[in-house]
Length: 292
Image (cartoon, rainbow, N blue to C red; front, side):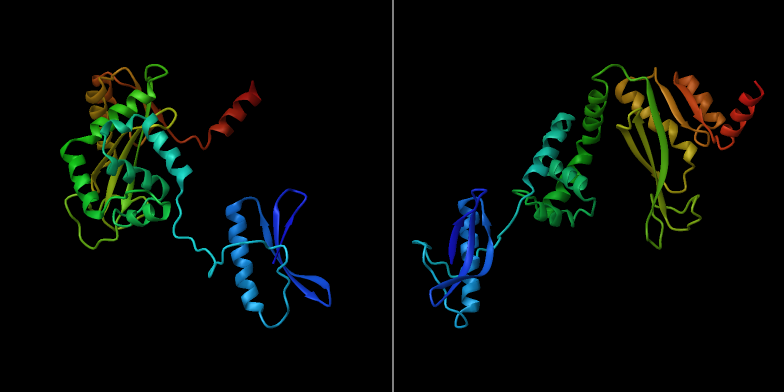
């Protein structure tokens, strides 16, 4: 085994053979840029020499006094420290740490990395090397506490405060989507309803209210058989009651803003912009400017 300093100041570890005074490099193990890397390469070289023992003579000159190592080092664990610290910092800057529950924070950050079931979140924590990861029973107790103590309101208040740091809110956007479940039977929430994909699986509706940059304010769920137009006002009313915000313009597609919704929005003091399909608009505009 030989240690050679390279031109880049790294230490190369090689396996050498000497025959009749002539030294031959049998194998280049690698180059180390620190004591820890060097120790690993030396251990690998010893293991490799053991595999080649008896086939070629080796020159151990220049190795120096190195403690004997019986086996190559093994990785006992790893940690995505940088990723986790970046997520923790973002969580705090958004003001979500006002909830003050470590298990809930770790649940949220794990979902950002990999959305999965509550039970499978333990695997995500393990792969990330999250210190002091909670048990599954602690997760369930935390979720029950989040409902009982209404952490949703605290998080919504923090989100609104973050979004309005640069000035008052003037525009919000709303839309609704469906989530399907592979379940044979309906329950009080998962019900068969109108499906754009013509599916007959139980589903729920999810309404999302965001600012003009896409930052979320309100997320609500509704029964799967509820009409999409009936989800808009409950979400806006919850938003208004929570933040006392009425002088905002609501943007939604034409299917969401029915005539009844438009009247109720006016009565509640909301302005509105109705989006509609514009597939023929480019052709209409081209024809218009061609005649001008």
